Amino acid sequence: MRPPMRHTVRSAAVLFCVAAFGLGGCVTNGIVVHHMPPETPAADNAAAIKKQADLAAAARDAAKIERTPEDAPPPLTAADAPSAKTYDPWGRLNRFTYRFNARFDDAIFIPVSNGYKYLPSPFRAGVHHFFGNLSEVDSVINYTLQGRLGRGLRSLERFLINSTVGIGGLFDFATQWKLPGAPTGFATTLAKWGMHPGPYLVIPLLGPNTLRDGAGYAVDYGTMYGIDIFHLYRGDVSWGLGIANAVDQRANVDFRYYGTASPFEYENIRFLFVRRRLIEDEGLHSTETRKRPPPDAPAGK
Image (cartoon, rainbow, N blue to C red; front, side, top):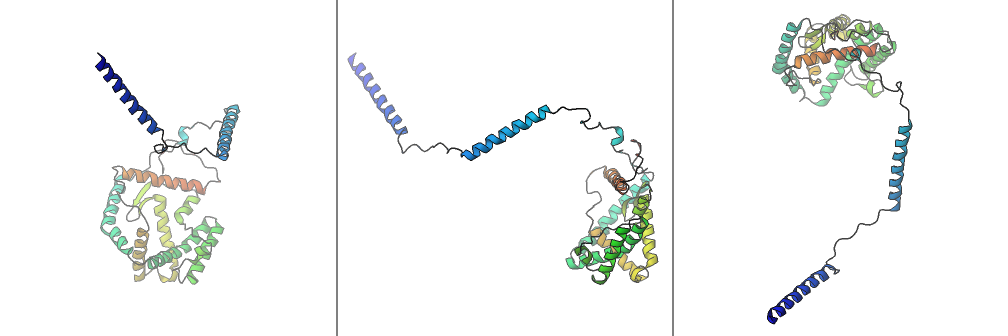
């Protein structure tokens, strides 16, 4: 039995040496590669402690504040929510006109306006400034009718500056001289006088509007036709300028018919357009007392 005992002792001695060698290697300087990160600077520690103290103090102060019913916001009522309905008595005709405008847009307006965008930028800017300058005359008249004489005087100054220094309106020097444009029309004048937008109306080629907007367009055109600035609104020249103005306006509008890919696009556009008009009317009469419509009243009625 002695040989096995010696073999066992020898094996245990070998294992002990291997373990001692391994443990000794783990504590040598050549193997240790992990180091503790340096200590955080005292300034960072102080800032963290101060921030924590400030948060705790703010929490204590908030807990001490006594909440009263007067501090709570008033509850929302049905009168505060706008009606999702829109007054559209000519719905069938409007939908037909909407589809016609979409097809005309895809077939003619969009291709022509996209081709127009390939023209040099200075040329397109000059065309846009030219027609914008002509509209200043209409703005002067309507601002006067609205009783906003300061804005009317600014529009008159813009027209005089851009018609002379700006070479007939091709350059908008008035904006550079701290006189930005703010065009208005007879539709806004009617709104200022208190006229409601009326029912929703889709106008051929012009797109979504209201009955008041349509009347405003007609009066604006009649006004410019009657004044006939620089003899541009009568004769053969007026046709060419009218087409150029339409193309320029379409090229500067990002709206695309059926661009939302929604089966309810007509309803969404109708609601948003009429709601925008109502918000603008509220802005015009913000200093006046206006009667809030019933919560169930359709927008535009």
